[in-house]
Amino acid sequence: MSFNQKLTPVTSATIRRWMILLLGDRDSEEFFLCPVSLSSVGIMAYAMVACGPALDPDSSQRIPPGNYGYYRDREGRHTGHPPLVNSPYRLATIELRLVQMERDLIEDFKRHQFPLATEAGKVSARDLGSCRFSGDRENTVVAWIIPPSISWETVDFAERFDWDQTEFTVDDSYRILVLRKMGNDQTLLPSHLTPHPQQTTAADNYLRLHCRYTLNLMLLGGDIGEDYPNSDILKAMERLGVDHVGYGEYDPSEMAPFTDPRWETDLGKAIMANVMQQRMVMSLYESGRGYQSEEDSEGDGSAS
Image (cartoon, rainbow, N blue to C red):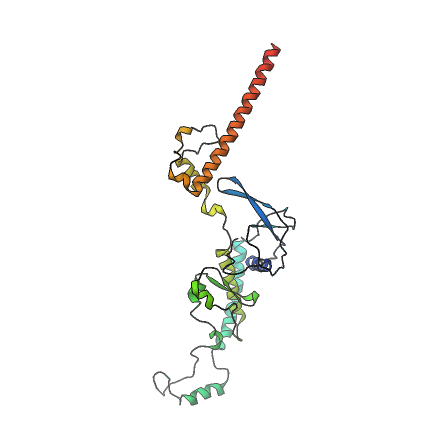
């Protein structure tokens, strides 16, 4: 999981609330965030080790920049991954929620009608019974142009909302969550959305679902393996002539020259570091085997 705190400040309490949202109706297991150090364990592969105390899970202070690991204990001894992937359950949950949303939307639609005949009468009297657009006095009815239940909606957010750039966090007092840079437009945003007094359960459920899947899309992942899958690493090693390093079949003459610009890429540098490490291991192994052979020879000579 990765996030840009310059766009939206994040706290431990926020992370916990997001995890509960991502897990849906399942009970979220207790977890802690511990600062971690990363060490290379291969080409574009890293392992993390807890290097500090766990953050207060209920803290409202902004999380300091850095790398953090997901642990099941405060001491950072038992790591793991949050159980977020369970497609059948999640799809069933969506279906149940959508059924409820549909029922609520029917009730919501009823509010698009004038609640009181007197209110419709006032409008009809104001307009003298004529259509405000055509002027026609026959077959006219009083209707909402913008129903109150959706009067808070504006087109300003439409595109950014549809493209998962902004979210409204219902359970955080409708705080507006910014997930992509918006330039000067962000300065115009309020910190929180003010819901309409007639905001419905269906609307809240929709916002929660949208936020849940946007978090899945925008925050989860970020592992270096997504940018450098094993297949790409193996192809790069083959093209650089070092795909057999460490397997006893390595021929230095097949390796691409050091002037090859591919060595200057991030992947090339990681491969070179691995080649040097493998050479060192092979050298130590060969020298150790030679030393052992000399001892064996001396032993055989003395026995004869």
